Length: 358
Image 1 (cartoon, rainbow, N blue to C red):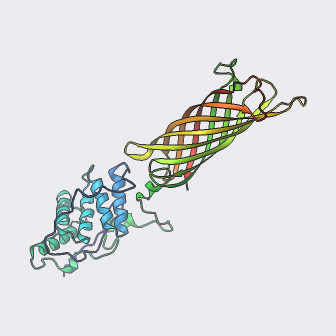
Image 2: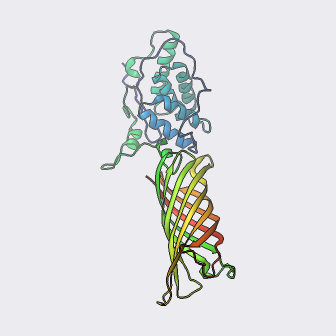
Image 3: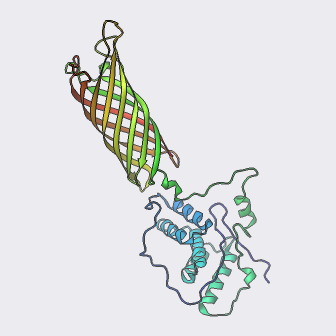
């Protein structure tokens, strides 16, 4: 019995030790490379490293079929040798000796001095003997046994071992893409701030006129229907900087119902382009400080289109920056004239929001 037998495992970015399992000695065709593409919520992760993390996380869960898809995607843009090694382990576990042999040979050619080269070489010889119908040339004890981190080198074990008292780290998987702010479905909440320019008064047209500027703060609730569409409901408080009848105060309620369309940029959902056409409603209250004047209120419907950019700050946290334009139609609730305001006008706005996936 060879006492130099090694088992190996993943250290940081290393391999996962999986059971050798029963290998069918009959020739088997390689996997069909024309099967359905990788489904990581339609595979829009951005980068070989992320696909590799997904593949190895699936290996840890025993999902070798899903791991193969992720390894294939990672190897489209990188030739990292350990990916061939780990993909070979998946093929071997699934009883696919021929692609496993090919992957092991690629790994050993690229990394002949790797710490786990002896262990991979033993696995390779076992498979070669089995598909050739030969007697085993490797003692069964020289094949790495099952178990995560079993038989890892001393250096790998130190790297893989968590610090004393440290919490276990979650797997990096395609779960991150299932966030409602990325490619997944579900609810999301956001707090927003907006600066608005209203164009309603025929006699007040300058850009800097304070009475045509307002600020809004409020909240947004989204429900993502899928990877590209969400329903957006927004409500907030709006306050105008001044009015034409000083010291009157104008403030009120603003709302929006819209469909948000999101398009991932650069092959992943970390950066997105957003477009949200919708219908809004404004309820404004004008409150003069002169007790001889009566307060009044008016309402208006607004058709608005918002376009902007989303930057993901974490798995389910995002910063949204957008601009919008639209048209509004106002009326007093009692049907009287609007006291110098036009009944229709335009609106332009800039918006900033911090959103959280729920």
